[in-house]
Image (cartoon, rainbow, N blue to C red):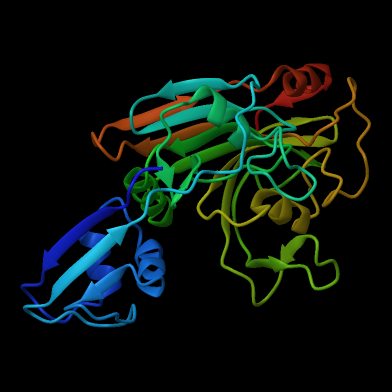
Length: 309
């Protein structure tokens, strides 16, 4: 096992919290990591242990011991994975429906993370553990574009872009019924459903959530919409359209009944088809777009209508 790395710093200007000061000096370390090092006794100021809230003073001498990333218990698995783009900083994958992003109770393996560990050997220690840096997530049955960081600094930069709404994500969804008007904006806070704690719902004290949509076409008793997410709450698209009484087709959690489709659909009709963001290292705008999976396109092909709104 590699030895930990040691750093020494001299403070020139006083007043800033030590956790914030050190995370700026060590760009590969997040503020939460620095706080953990402080609590573990890996950071000293003038030979003394301090709290994360300590404010540095001019002339302070800081010693930092940075531990090596822990070895993850996750195992690489040779699972097919469609990688659309990859460089030394990040990659973009087209996640299939039915694949869970992270291991969780009931899904200990067979996840996107297990596949990434097999296909991408140069992943750095993300968050102090040797594992892929998932920047954002898609639900198990949602297919489409997913962004992965290869190191902590890129992960934080991409997360900041999401927070500042600089990342553009667009989805295609087939909804039950005919949704009107043809273009709209849904602003409804989302939190735990007080009646069914296993799912999310629109609640007064939830986190703010904003969804924009535009109707692509009407099919029989369904509506195809393009969805633009301005926030990223859990199950946001599914909750917002179910709240409007136009749930995503095939969604057994938020839907009202199983739709009669030919061919039958064993997933819900939600696909992350468009992604645009700034590359953290080069500043270049990267844009990706993927077609509907064959199973979803087959459903549209069998429906009558499709006239644009």
